Image (cartoon, rainbow, N blue to C red; front, side, top):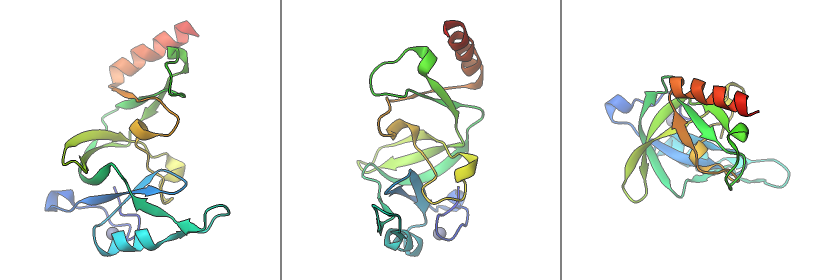
Length: 156
Ligand SMILES: [Zn+2]
């Protein structure tokens, strides 16, 4: 995981944390507390209809304290808020797990998705658990993913 401003990797083992930032038009990104955080919050998103601050603090997530390899786990994503048949569920490979500290002080791991074409784009990270217009997701390890894919193919 790299800082959206200085592009340096976060040194979680040395006690660094990553401030969670929400992009005005896209997903999420991360910055070192202090100068990088201030630079990100001061950046403008100069697109028609926006022309406003590119980033704001995430109202729920304060910081990422550590990351862990995804080890083949995927997020299960529904295309709508209401229940949908299994054939409409999508599986999105996690890029890594993030140990998130929330504003109420609680901590837990969340999956993070970042598509290859968004690797270097500010706001390119996504927390599948809070994507607008989508149902809450679950996570599946690699063997279960294969089983579910089989079920989806049979159902379709
Ligand atoms: Zn930085």
